[in-house]
Length: 598
Figure (cartoon, rainbow, N blue to C red):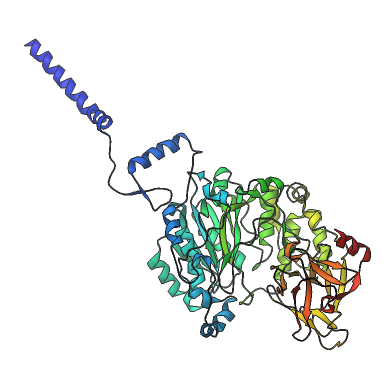
């Protein structure tokens, strides 16, 4: 009896052990399958086996610094096959009949919206990144982001193409939300039709609205206050994100919360929506009138074309920043009105308060630069000057005097209350502006000195053969100009005929920041006005004192003109042609000879 009882106890004990440990043993022997739901890899398009994903997760736990290839190769291959108007970033060419229909939309948008409407919201773009970007890997764990797009009366297709491009070319789990921040638009399509479209097409896009027109800066702040992502990415409302744009913006922030990252900004042509590179990188800067400028890349940056490089100042509206860091810095100064100066204010305090800013060469976003501003500004008075003075008073210390020497009337502008901004600077123990100039923007004074050297030449520029003067007639960027009757010969005629061959070696109308720019080397290449960048290139000019020719070294051609048509253009240099001889009114003979000999 005792033996039977003992045996029974043993069997019960074995049964209990089997119940407790059996499933674990069987799982190890035969494996374990998760549910049949499809898991998605980093590309968010190509399905992967759950076990593969599980192995990745285990691997990530062991090595948080693991890097992966984030490219969505399936989507890239599909986009390469797309054809149609504007596809592959090609120009949209309108027929003669269509040309007549574009005017009304052009006038209210400042770009050819008729051409935009012919392009798919999901159009493919040519991948124009440096070849090293195409094999570059990024951290497998990246923070999610809220993409903030401020807009006012933005055209329907450009606004929606912005949204589509961001969603199409981003890993889904990294886009927490897109926030369309409406600055009190009055166009009907920006109201209920936009709400309805967003509701029916997206699950992570929302619209927030200002009760009244506030301007770009405060509208960005409104969007940022509604955001819940770990990173804020600010974009404009007429952009297109290109291939694998997002990981290069997020990785530096994942490594260091206080790093702010800007993409390369490409150009979407305002006339035909062709997509092209603006350049292959430069460091942001400013001159002492607060015009945005650029500095050349440093030798170390040039050796590593796919790596982020440090930049003193951001261009403006396109950048990524940790949400926590943005609000630690106080966001944008809410006292800045409408637009202007916000990129300097944020750039200065990022650097001076312990952060850094980089440009990510492998993140490219196209932007439509309008031909003209189609909307009136809601600001009162010189709001840009007031903004600049707020920035100067809070962040620039003794260097603000260089701004005031160029813009003496700023001294009399009332900045309003800046006590909160000064308190943020004290609280964060931010460095002086002298540190910023010596350590971060150390080469800025060489390119943009606080006290500018004298010009090589200035005054009217009279063509000898035509006896007419160059006249830009106060035209804007991207516009051509020609020759007209000289103001000195007809004082009632008007015009803009006072120019400088500046120490930057560019030609520009006096008191303006647009330069003579030649981008082609062909015969009769046009000369247009383009924002002065101070980096020579297309804007580099020399004057031959002996034969009076204005020589353009990059194209290897000389300025020429047609007296009858009153046109100017570039031609093969011929010192016997009187139409290539220009007399500059006042010349610094010693310096201009030195420039010609260089």
